[in-house]
Image (cartoon, rainbow, N blue to C red; front, side, top):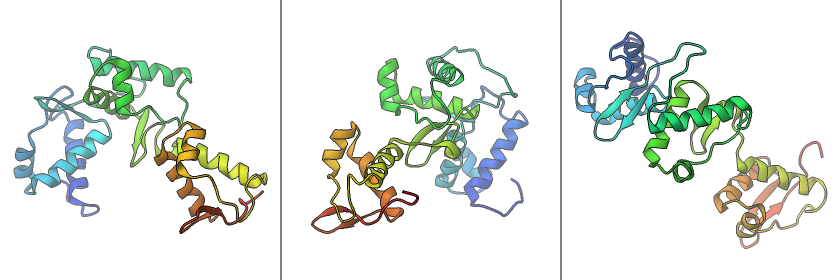
Length: 229
């Protein structure tokens, strides 16, 4: 393993495995050694190895295959493309075309694994493989706690951002004056056609900006006007 001492152990293990894959050991289409074997190889606990492998899955370099283990996807040369052959590759190709056509612009959040699985009539695991494949091509990236986005974290724009922007505009226009109580999570979720968790995240954004504050027994109260309004 690399002698570099920077970063957690699992990150260093992931980097070492990534280097080995670039060198063709194992090659694209090959299988990673099991967690037990990797743990012995690197002299660490299986939990540490699992974190390292998850990091490789998150970036799309390997995918988990039920009953087989982790398969190396490999890295494409710039402009390279795989021919769709499996279910997950077919799904990835469909999403890839939508990204290239502009139907899914940078910053667009992809539908969740469950919704995509229902749309294509496959399992969530198959959808996860498709997302990981696109991540290996750097077309999408996972943002912790939010989901998958076209272009990755630097472009991530969520439905919570949209709800927060709408509320920010309503406050700036005077629809909700300073001291006014904002509608509750259920009412806003129904009005905006989103889930309560999305509204809760939007409130958190406004609270972080100091525009609203949560008061016991009252709910979210407008504290100040948005900057620049």
